[in-house]
Image 1 (cartoon, rainbow, N blue to C red):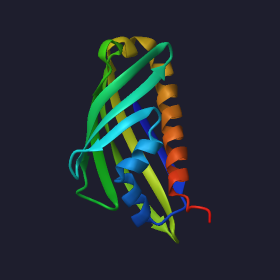
Image 2 (image 1 turned 180 degrees about the vertical axis):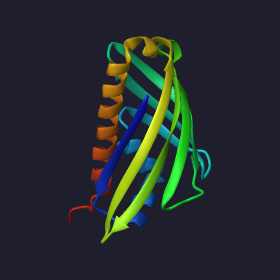
Image 3 (image 1 turned 90 degrees about the vertical axis):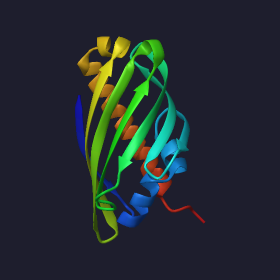
Image 4 (image 1 turned 30 degrees about the vertical axis):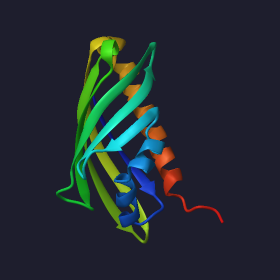
Length: 149
């Protein structure tokens, strides 16, 4: 499964990049995230509860960041295990460009799933992945918004 999108964020690139590396902002932004622990500057451990069609599972997994091109670009890879529900692994490439204090985030992501999840059908998985990505970026945009005084 592949996903790609472009999101406009009303914040400078430095702020967007810092937020993408802030475990608390990420925890608040990831749908169903119960816990996100920063193990190192390049590795995170997560526990997420997701419902995909009739399957609800608690996934535990790790994400590794490659910040070689930061802050303009970076990539991540991860894998998660949802017990009897199945497993997933994948990655994403992200680029950030700024124009007058507005940052455009572009990503391409790919994922492979197995177990019960793989039996649900590609259309359900694809639409759920798009919905979860949209929720993440809506939450992320809200976390970036300046606090009202």
